[in-house]
Image (cartoon, rainbow, N blue to C red; front, side, top):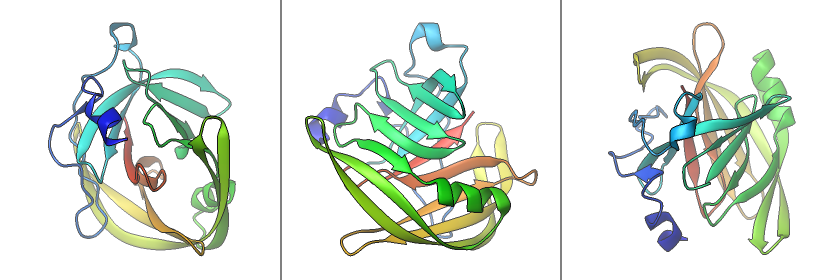
Length: 199
């Protein structure tokens, strides 16, 4: 997978570290490059691979029934459903599918508590390994995130998930209007957490 990622120069530009500093605040550089010319006017999604320190930009190529697929010039894509990470394609260790409907419902209503989520991971060819997780949704601290237009005060929500083999934490950042303006969502052991910021 590392060799595959190293060849994604058009998408993943090493434009500075893409990290989650203490307090769970994403810091994502605004690199508006790496999309095809015919996608130049489309809505954009900044995507960061936290563990590898890469940041790139994708353009919206499909929007249907709440699902939005963003793609790079290299045909690498991320699909979101109302801001929730659903799938990745082209990275090499891809997330086949996600059912995070309980999480989405809790986030939309502002509730905290325990939910379940389900992930499908490609294991080679078309084989998919399904995994279930129990997650605890808790309020995070108010903080500020950096965006292309400057700092934005946000309210954080933390989702801590585990099963007997794996554990991960997702972060969701909402502005004063209640809109999800950035997130850090786990895409599996191969990719780690993706930092996602719609533009």
